[in-house]
Image (cartoon, rainbow, N blue to C red; front, side, top):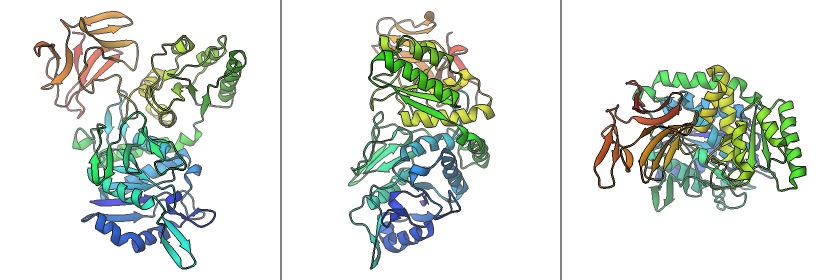
Length: 491
C-alpha cells in the first residue's frame, strides 16, 4: 500500500518547553531517520510518505495546535486529501487531541457528496485515519533528538498505519489500540492514553496481537466505480462542494447552550435570554444540550417561545455520554417537538455541531429549504448517527422506522405485523405478523414459521429502502443510480 501521512500539528509532533510543533519538514525527516527502519519492519511491502505540504498559515511552522483550528481548516485538510488522492491508497492525519473528534466528524461530510435523501453522489473510497498522542513522539535533549520512550505516539502512529490495511472507506480515529468511526468518537480523557471513546458505536477494529475487525458494521463505500473519488468526475464534485463550504463556513456561528439544574423560575428565563442573545448576535444555528433524552425545563413557556420564534435550525442533544435524543417521552421535554427543534438521535454533541455547521454552509449553494435541511440533519449521511428512516437490516417485531421529512412511520406490530401510517392514519397493513427483510433484491415479509406472506417487486441489486413522508412511501433506491426508485409501500 501507498500510505500518506499528513501532518497538521498537535502534541505528537511537539518538542521543547513549553511544547511547540516542530517544523513539518524537520518532523518528516526525524520520522525517517529515527523510525524509518522500525516502520518498514512493521509494515512490510508498504510505502509510507510523510507529507509536509499542508500549511494553515505562512507564519511559523505552518501547523497548529488543534485548539487553534478553525472550521475552514477542516476544509484545508480535506482539500489536501483530494490533492493527493490519486497517488496514495490510504491517509493517516496527525492531529492534536483537543479537537480531533470535531475534525473526525467534519471530514466525512467534506469528503462525500450526498443528495437530498442522504444517498451518496460521490463517495470516499479510501481510509482516512486520524491519530495523535497524549505525549510527544520525540524528546529533545542536549545530546539531540530521540524517540520518547514514555509516549503513546509510536503505538498510535504504527497502529493507524496498520489499520489502513483494512481498507475501510471512511474517516476513523485510531487511539490506544482502537479504531473508532470518526463521527462517533468523543474525547473522554486528558490524562489517560485511552483519550477517545465511541459511546454509541463499538470499535471498527481493535489492536492486540494483530489487528482484528470489530463488531461495528463498516460503511459500504461506493456502490459503483463512477461514484468513487478515484473517478475524476466524482472527485471534482467533492472539490466543488468543498470550495463552496470553505467560502462561508467560518461565517457560521453555532451557539451551544447547556441546560443547568436550577430553579426553573430563574433558569428558564435565563436560558431564553441566552437564546435570544445568541440569535441577536447573529447565531446561524443553536445546539441545546438537555438532560437525559434531551429534556429542557420550559419554565412557564419562555424557552418554548424563544425556540418557536427562532428562524435558524435548532438541534437538541443530551449532555449524557450514552443514549439518544428522540421521542421526548417526559413532560419536561414533550413540548420541544412543537417548536420545530430537531432531535439529534444518538449523535454526539460534537458531531451534531460539525454537521449543523457544514449543512448550514451548504444550504445556500444547494438551495435547500428548511424542511430539506431538517431532514438531512436527522438522516445518517456518513454513519454519524443511526439510520432511522431506512431498513439497514431486518425490521423485526417491535421495531419501527420513521421518515426524516415528516410524520410517516413503518411499525412492525408483534401481533398484526408491519403497518405504514402517516399522521396516525394507516395506509398499509401487512397480511400478518413477521419480519420485513431484503431477499433476492425484494422486500419480503417472512412469517414466524419461515413462510413468505408478502413480497415486493424486484429492485436493483443492493437497493436501499428509505421511508419518506413527501411523498408518503417506502421506496427502494438504486444506490448506484442505474435504475429509477421503486415504490413498494403503500401499494
